[in-house]
Length: 606
Image (cartoon, rainbow, N blue to C red; front, side):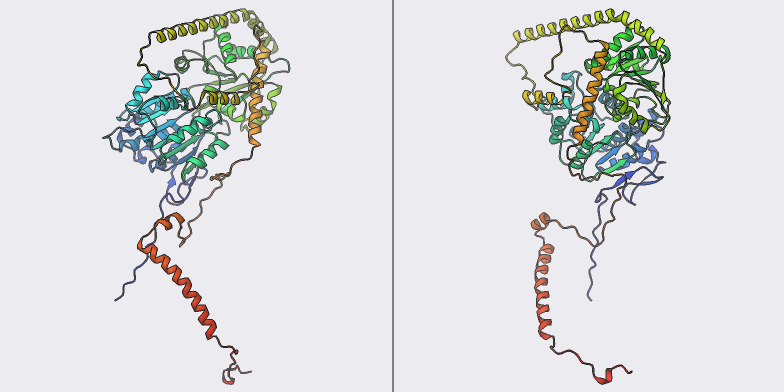
């Protein structure tokens, strides 16, 4: 009896094909027909451990948001993720919950840093750290924050203990990689990039290349972004391996509950902006207001003006040290102050509850920046309002905003007599503003002198076995060259000493910087783009059905495979070719020359 051995069909892995999740219909596909996104899924149905379920209940998370419901099951499988969802949709919990769940079941005999979360700003890193600590409050998972501006030695000590999760900003992380002994990224198993569109722009590009180079190659990478640009797509094509693409919605439109208003600034009346802001904050919007300006100097000036006018306010920009920045945020969150004046450092990712109004002193550089700014209000279904001042040079961006708006855009008019009244008050306060700024300058100079004296004292009393000087991955010359290349305007232009700029001059500088940034973006968009592994139109992408009976062949694998079956296959192919050639020759030899003629008895009757 001969038994015929049936060939077993090779099972295709779950992650063989690039799959797409698009949340457009009622039930959307994640892996073709295998796994489906369920909008009605609850946290209890996600098979999370009891400590995490307890933390979710404590934090009053009732129902997962679409990004959480789509991401958590896929992330638990260890698959690379390319996620896009609007700001304020709960992305932090979407990537932290599966990470914590997987860490609970990792071996604990030897401490290993397995997770790295990278964020663009210090405030956002602190916010993610606080949320992560709340989610991990009933577990023994160690989480460390490594952000710029905070105490360096304490961070070094925490990193030497080898925590499970590191939440960091790129600059401080590279500083620790260069200067903290026994700290490296070789053991990182999960890399998470939040606000990827900001972290991958030209200001962070060199730092990000260095960090990704030092990470372990065999890792899970999760990339989350509110808006999609070329840098994000390039990174997704190069860093992610067969990612699951989860597009809930890109941050290309403002919230439905946002009421947008615009105030027209007449030509040659740019100096009225400060008076209009003071009038709005004194008369109409008196609490839970964020005011955005383009430059640090203008933010500081507005803060001084509002303080002198008796408005409770705080400032947030890059010239403050980190404790001052965190203190300003805390005061605004706890309603100790009514107004927060900030640069674009506060426009991304920060979840500040209860913001009623956003005022734009000048319109930002691009539509995406505008959407991020006004996204601080009208969050989680609440009603919000944005008021923007628009001059003649900003009309192009205004047209884009009006074109994209779903609700009607309103024109707010501030009576001229009110503007002139507050303008007079500001002129009377000009001496006080100058005096405050002069005092601050003198105080800074005294602090700098004290710092230098302290430095000299330490150099004199220094012992021979001191710590080595801190290094950086770039040379000073490379760093300076990069700074000059990224600086807007003419880097060689020097400010005139002794000349006090007028209000018009200051606002012109703000508008000029916005125009220069727009010109840089336009120039960049004209450059030829790279060919990407991920298609341009991701929403219309449909996964191809796997073809049956098609065996994937790899030259490298076949060359190195010396198994018995492979050798047989190669021998068969060679001999089969020879057999077929011989058969053809035999047929040609045996073929009769004369044509076949049918006999009369086989002929068809007429």
